[in-house]
Image (cartoon, rainbow, N blue to C red; front, side, top):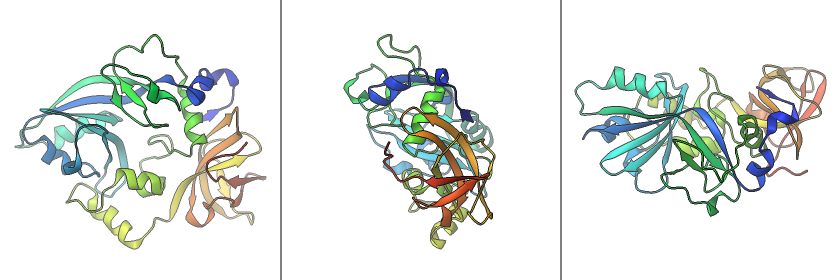
Length: 289
């Protein structure tokens, strides 16, 4: 995805200085019921569902039998039921259709698409019925239904731009059906994958990668002199192909940025690479002007 036109970044200032709401069409809210729901979910998600408790959600993923990312999830304890925000939502529905056999597990769709209120000052905001969801900043909130009238609305493009500025990868944007969770970076891996839990679909592959100590490639952010095109090759200064651009944006604060998936040895902050004939540099965070 390429973000270039300034008018695409509506609400960007509010999102990055105070708070704003962004519509996330792929974020689907489900209700899991039944006495076997937690045990069943433990066998499906990469996080340790035994650690679920009131308050902040557990972050996790659903992966294929060979470990590739299929969806990201946020799991919430709601007392007698469990709520799951799944992106994309059809993955959880397919899991329930295929893998609920004799278990007492029910699945109900609560909302297709969610508003997410994000921003550095969002912790000062109280919204009844909202779920904690730190997608960009601490204190973030997800909610179904209508957006609160007192909250400004930011474009999805502004959300994508802000996430690049913060070095946050997005499942389905920076990943594809070949991506493994650890390839989205150490922060993503630590928050989404538990290596001390029991078996789940794809566990054997991810455990083997963890035991080896690393993947062969990682996602990171590049500072560019011009707007890069997603799908463009990232090469070493010697012209060796080492990766691919996943998305790009023109940040009002930091200039042209690009997310890229490339070989680990080129992902360290300060590494100099090429996109086409233009020299680019791997970012260190936090970004400076």
